[in-house]
Length: 316
Ligand code: VAH
Image (cartoon, rainbow, N blue to C red; front, top):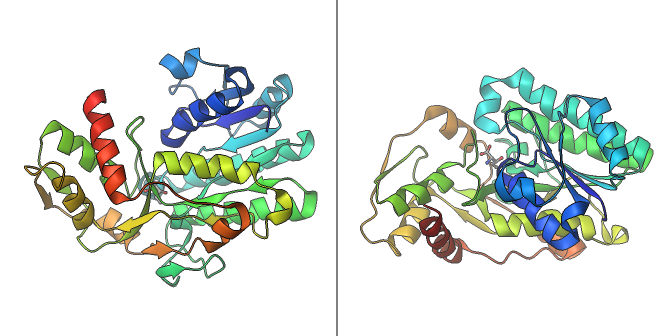
């Protein structure tokens, strides 16, 4: 990787991935792609080049790739699971028509492509405990349909055209920089904001609803490490199971309460989020990522909770 283009650079993952890539590869070598209304601000804007990049405009993507001699595209444009249920055609348009544009530009210009999948790519028939790398994927959400289709389309472009496509199935990602927008796992981010502000938290997900979660530093590490991996070692490509922690609302509450004894939580279940969460696995088997490109997370629930509370206290 030398010249990198991040599509969706102002989103929850993109805003931090762009900065991490600039730190590793040089500020001028990472172009932040954004859409109207979500322009980069502050350090993200000042630290390196940015370009208006609507993923549904193939010519615009091609012009940016050629102008900056891009060799690697991180495609982070997507509607998250809850929003995608209310706007399914837009979710498909961005997730798949957009991906098609990225893959065609990558095929013409010789770029590698990272397009994240998700635990949302699994469905109720998928084994929920130690979910295998290769297993049934019959998601019941439009988000999941776009993620499975994205995996298949990315593998197709690798096998048919030799486009260097690679990706991971992200769990719910927890971060303190840019809040997520419209996800089923957002509760695991929101809970920290309430704890730091000293407010009681009302959890929208039932106790006992285990889902894979990951702290943003580990997610960034995975997104970069897989693209730096030795291609000859890769048996899989789109997309690798990765995991770091699996918990339900009562467990993250206890972890935070251990650090903030006065913190209180109650439940008010949101049926759409709960119905989506119920179709997702509890915990993934990520042995293929560990064997094929040395994936190894650094944070667990305790260390993440401590770091999140410290960083959010400074931020807020
Ligand atoms: C969501 N945070 O909740 C995203 C993510 C696995 C969850 O895809 O939709």
